[in-house]
Amino acid sequence: MSGLALPPNDGGHRFPGFDVLGQSKHWDDATIKVIAARLQPPAPIRFFTEHEADTATALFNLLLDQSDDTVVPVTNMVDSRLIARETDGWHYEDMAPDGESWRLSLAALDDEAHNLELKAFIQLALDAQEGIIQAVQDLGSADWHGMSAAHLWSLWTRYACTAFYSHPFAWQEIGFAGPAYPRGYKNIGLDRREPFEVRDAHPTLADGWHP
Image (cartoon, rainbow, N blue to C red; front, side, top):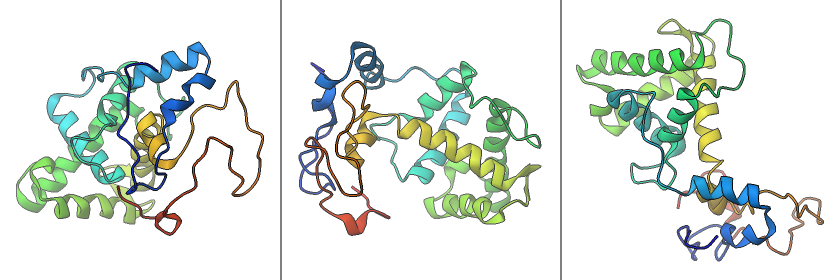
């Protein structure tokens, strides 16, 4: 894809030398168009308020172990889904529709922060933010601000992971060569790599690897 680039995978990465965009010659025109769009500047925020977007960004940074200058604009991508009502097509019966649940849960993060330190969630130190988020996960099916904590955790992580792992930067990071259509695969099986795949240089770090 001419003119488009991702950060290089050098020796510090799990898949050194791998370049997912180098596989674009195997993709059809429709696929190239979709993937190229994901590498353009993100769409402006339209669903979230400015404060909600900042809170959502802090949440996503914690869930995905990213920083504010990340290549993957997760908040904008989630915002675009919500403004277009592109949900998963269902929601838990004990929760409001996704858009409303997002607003309620982001406000609840501020409530938790205010109870803790009389601050907004985004004003808390990182360890305090982490404590609030970890408490939600630890609650399981118990109630958290009128919502099932487990169902809310599912909402947060579904949207976060769907956005992050749809982006070529994430593919580059995990050594995924992108859509297999129309090329397909020929070497099916555990640890049987295709010619275009790169061996994991740090396999023992796979469960907790950071760039």
